[in-house]
Image (cartoon, rainbow, N blue to C red; front, side, top):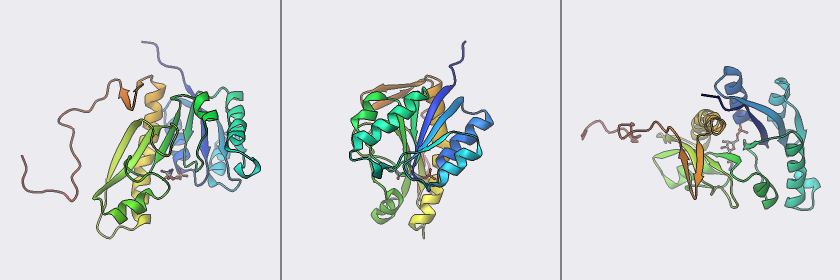
Length: 226
Ligand code: GAR
């Protein structure tokens, strides 16, 4: 069977870029057939820019404060991505909302990572709000971006137990480790042509989950086994 071609990626960041690093590492390991054509940051000081440069990836700073509207900012991003024939856009800690300019140019081709189990705790304080609410299971979500904050069709989620004594930092760090697994995985599913969006749902061809897939229970239940 013919293999799907390498996917051309554009990655948008605002900060540390550890998810960008996870994507780079997955490509280097051979687990992800992708080529990062461009990394764009809206902040000049974003540490992720340095990560990209270290790997010889082209970088660009497009500062949102220099634009009078969200649409103009997006038009600048879009032009740079189209110029490099980008097929899939990965938002890796990109802290700006996209306008229809980007959403309509890349329908079903923009992925975002968020550090909560959506639809719980959208926004920018996922782990903090999970702790404050008192949930026992937190996590992260990769989803296709649509209009609105963290509301698009879910592709992959990872559940992370909240532990006694967790503060925002500790929980966020454990969630981040799982983000680094599921984001490259979701991109690989896209590259392999296995994702199909049906309304709110993402159908994954060859999904290997079964009725025997282990549930995550937290705190662990050591009696009452069935
Ligand atoms: C990640 O935890 C990501 O889930 C979160 O920002 C962090 C970026 O880290 N994104 C959001 O909260 C978006 N709503 P990184 O720059 O090290 O990849």
